[in-house]
Image (tube, rainbow, N blue to C red):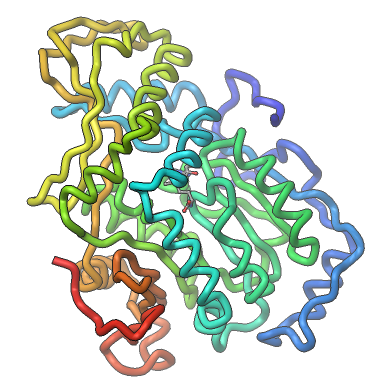
Length: 402
Ligand SMILES: C[S@@+](CC[C@H](N)C(=O)[O-])C[C@H]1O[C@@H](n2cnc3c(N)ncnc32)[C@H](O)[C@@H]1O
């Protein structure tokens, strides 16, 4: 468990270097030497030999301050329907429950995407880094337990790996474990809300290096369409000109299948949502009674998304952040959306956000896609034609999800 920041800690100003939560920001000479040995060569000639132990992974803490959390919750509670930012689901217990969701038989996304990344890692790495010099840094958004990036790290051998996640309790141990498994790649964890970050914090590992983005898990689906567009544009700014982004996107499927995936028989998805009430009670002096709510995951066809909500069982009044909030019987508190995109709708979204889709890989069942995007203004000539290349894990002909 990491040391918790003091309760009144504020978000570091983007303009001043953030304070490291765990380790000093300087890297050892051996780490720097290893990076220089790979410069400009992809794949690195002869692979990268195991190095003497590097310094442990570093962690920067830019977690939103409690006052930001209170403001966001008050805004969300005032909306109709009430809706809180999805990142609030990820305290230590929420992160643990999300891992458990990934193991439920009904929820195939984690297994399918992990398998696709493992099978296609060399090809994905080649496409990501093609023509990019010097050796880039890989930046993962919403990195969670870092369980998906391993094959990509091995194939890509980036100059450094930077993991962004809101869940400080999970990020620290995960970065330390990853650094031990991949001693040749310096690991930096940044605890932050990536949707509220104007720039990556200044850090020696990020200086003078091209950046490649990685955003698996179909987390873009947590945002509504205007927010998703803004987020992809933000990623383009955070990564900088000429960058590329590999992003995992879940596709529409039969509503019964989707509803089952977000309402597993073991009740883990429900527990994940109810944990939010416990967090609000603990951190914002709430008095939610979980027994007075029921969990619901419903396909909203018009918006192509699953809406997950805690629905009030009867009319009631709740105290939260020093205010009283009335819930009517049947009134939902939206905990999370999970929007699904066909390849075409996702390519339209990325085009509207300053990205150009250049390749797509999907699993054998065409349930989900990994899209490779390049910044629209800098890639047109390098990437060639207008139609993105499509790659399947098996020879099944391409079909578009309904
Ligand atoms: C759906 S999980 C995906 C985890 C992992 N990327 C995967 O594919 O299995 C979402 C992850 O993003 C993190 N997260 C959610 N919203 C975030 C935000 N606004 N800023 C930073 N991290 C966020 C959560 O803590 C969680 O680890």
